Image 1 (cartoon, one colour):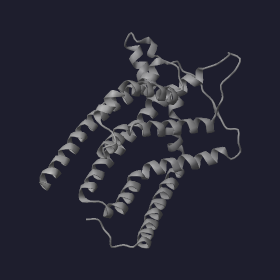
Image 2 (cartoon, rainbow, N blue to C red):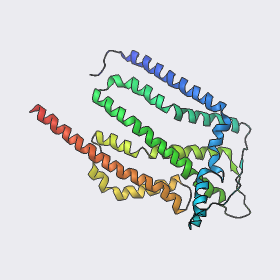
Image 3 (tube, rainbow, N blue to C red):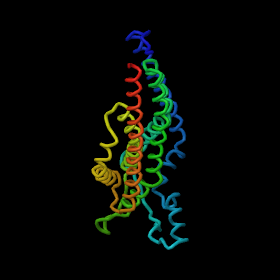
Image 4 (cartoon, rainbow, N blue to C red):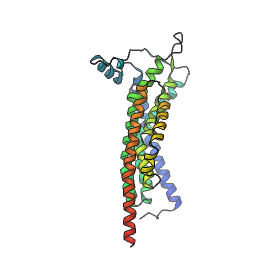
Length: 274
């Protein structure tokens, strides 16, 4: 049964304490991340290096096979700073970003504790099943961006020139903003199955609808992938498109299963009333 023991102001007080604990957790993690500057920016700036693990693996594969197009030449890419306070502010921004991502399990846990008294037992079970899938898919998207999408995008843009007389010098702020945006976007995009389950649970979408608009979804995915990846090569585009299309197909299966469950639940409810 839902809890009705607390008054409105009691709930506000509990929410205040929850938000305070979340803020403390983020602040502590941000301070820790800020103190480990070399490790933090060693990881953030690693994808720009020609010896990044992804490029090393592809170069080894190209060397020991006939796939010479996988070989990446070493390119010296310089990142500069043009503002007096930019490096310090970027240090704070990246530390906060890492802190929010790192504290996200604790944040979700605190939110769940706050709302769980108002949920039925069955709704709590739904939430407990949803949370691991949410985090798993989000971090898969982040890892895909870090190891594949961003390194290829950066390598393409670093070598792109409208004229050989124009040299590429990348601003640190531009690099960091692109890095954080791509990782966040890929993490969100990979939540497609979770959103599909949630919508199907409340009967907002059906498997027949998703199958009917599969072609349109494919076009939308291609457009989104083209926006996410600023490169023009088909290889990088496919690296983004194929996982999203697979997630869409997985979403159809999830919605189909949930649709059957919803119908069975309705039938059981009608039978019980009779």
